[in-house]
Image (cartoon, rainbow, N blue to C red; front, side, top):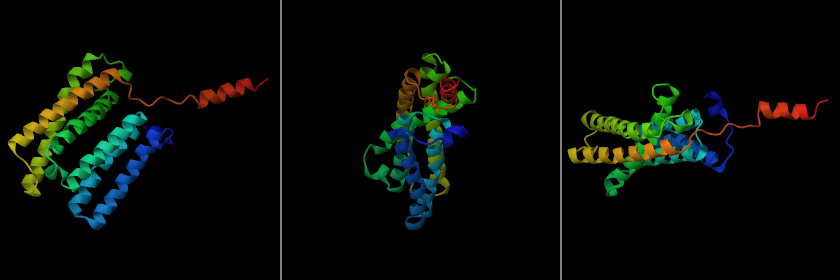
Length: 208
């Protein structure tokens, strides 16, 4: 994991994902200086999710997708887009829950809790069944956090029964999409062949 986190970016997607990580860090400072402290807190909460794809060594396109989705979800809250754009809340729940479900599945696989990725030899039906369940669990946790914020931080947080059920339905749909991606796609970044093995081959080629 340390090697993955410290590796230099190579593709356009990896450079773009790292740029979004920098943007996320800068955004915390901007929110802290010019916006409300709660806005800075929301921006800061996004930082761990921005770092996870790099720590896990994921492919550039998926790394970029995670970073873009997390930033959109966080700053949509800061700019109050969930209230001002009809249906935006459901779209974000669909995409963000699907993305986070894949990340959670990768973590569970790495921790040897349950194998859910194609890279580790999971059968296709395993993520197709487990990913929607994991997405519903994440959706429930999301709604609990929203309720806690409404109950103890600010009554301006929008929490209703219809909103909660709708969010969880779309989160479950995101989980179905996540299951399909896990069953059909390789998300692990390819290992470079230019390292020790390549050096050894060059040494043998230039030897006696």
